[in-house]
Length: 233
Image (tube, rainbow, N blue to C red; front, side):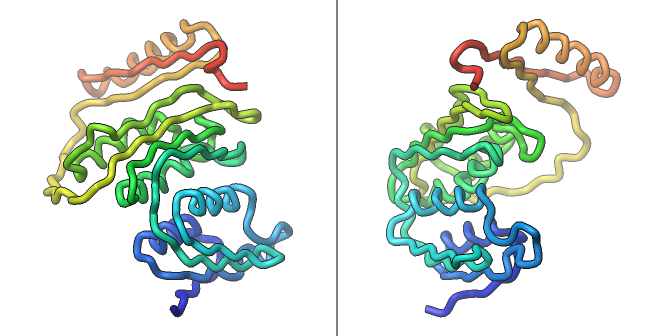
């Protein structure tokens, strides 16, 4: 089977996702070949391991310098898995990919992801949970076992967060009709705190609502506080 050839590290994750869904092999070359630190970095290696665990029969070849990746996708298996996402990127980096792949697995996916839940690079797990899940539910006919649950929060530099993601097998995708939402009529948000007084979250909510209520009357901000063993390392 001929592989599609791409150059550079841009859209690394997206290319691998589309390759997995389409069943077509790809080759990514010249990955940071002119950089002081050439090749695939730690979190990209971690993403490749996630794909290897999620699929059956996939072949992943990385050359010695890490500047070339050859990927032949296998079958999406799903099942019960655990994956250590490390501390270089948030769990959301991997969760975004799983949201695209999980509905098409052979078995319902039940995966525990460990690492960082909130950082300054990726959207937080909260943002994924409150935005992507409602969108995915519009396509899935049976969304009873579709869930993202934050078990423990983990912040840089040590992480220690734990997130559970469950997704059922999708046999049929529901078609939807897109309607222009027009002007924003309400605001929904969240405020989280770890290893501090719960009053800190309340103060953040009060300050935010004082500003937002000047523009819209319907503002709700969810407060989420973690302590003890659920507050990371």
